[in-house]
Amino acid sequence: MGYIIETRDITKRFGGLTAVDKVSMGVNAGEVVAVLGDNGAGKSTLIKMISGVHRPDEGSILLEGNPMKFENPMGALASGIETIYQDLALAENLNVSSNIFLGREKTKKRFGLFNVLDHPYMLEESKHVLDKLDIHIPSLKSTIRTLSGGQRQAVAISRSIYWDAKVLIMDEPTAALGIAEQKKVLNLVNSLKSQGIGIIIISHQMYDIFEVADRIIVMRRGRKVAERLVSETDPDEIVGLIVGAETVKK
Image (cartoon, rainbow, N blue to C red; front, side, top):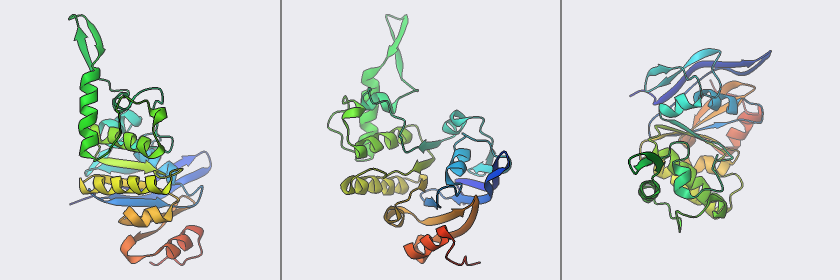
C-alpha cells in the first residue's frame, strides 16, 4: 500500500531564496513522521505547502496516490489534511464544543424561519469525540481561556479528528507544556496513530520525537539530508545530522 500523503521533489522559492528544494517524503496511515531541522531549514514551508498555505513552484503532492493542487488551506481541510499550529487557532472566549465546530457550526431552523446555532447537537457530538479519544475535560461549557495548555491541545486535536482527518500535521505540539501534560499529549498522538491517521510532527523536543515517531526526516538549508527509522538511530546522530556534523549515510 502506498503513502497516505506524499511529496515528490517539492520546491518553493521566495524571490531568490529557495526555501524548500526538491524534497520527497511520505507518511503511511498509522505512522508518525517527524520533520526536524534547525531554524531556517525549511520545515514550516514544507508543511505549509502540504496544508495549502503555499503553492509549490515545482513538484507534486499526492493524497492516497492522487495528485492534489490546493488553492488554499480550505482545500486541504476538505481533503482531510488538518494542521494544528503552535498557537492552536482556538477562540479563547468560546467553549469547548463551539471550538470543535468553529467555522463549521451546526444550525437548525427556529419557527421554521431562522437559522440558529444547534448548541445541544454540537455539545453531544463534542462529548462523543472526546470520549473516543479518552480526553477528560470537566465541563465542555468551559471557555478555552480557563483550560490548561494540555487541555487546549486536546481540544484542537479533537476538532481535527471529528472532521475526519486522514493526515494530521502538528507544529510543536508539546511546546510550553509541563512534563505531565506533555505525556498526555504524546499518549494522545499514540492513540491517533492506532486509529490509522498519518501524522507529521515538527518539534524541537528530541525526547518527544523518540517517544512517538516511527521515522525521522532531517532537513538542512531547504533540503532533505537524511531519513532514519527511529529504531535504528539515536538522538546524538540526529543532532549531528541537523547541525551538519554527522556524515550522511548514503
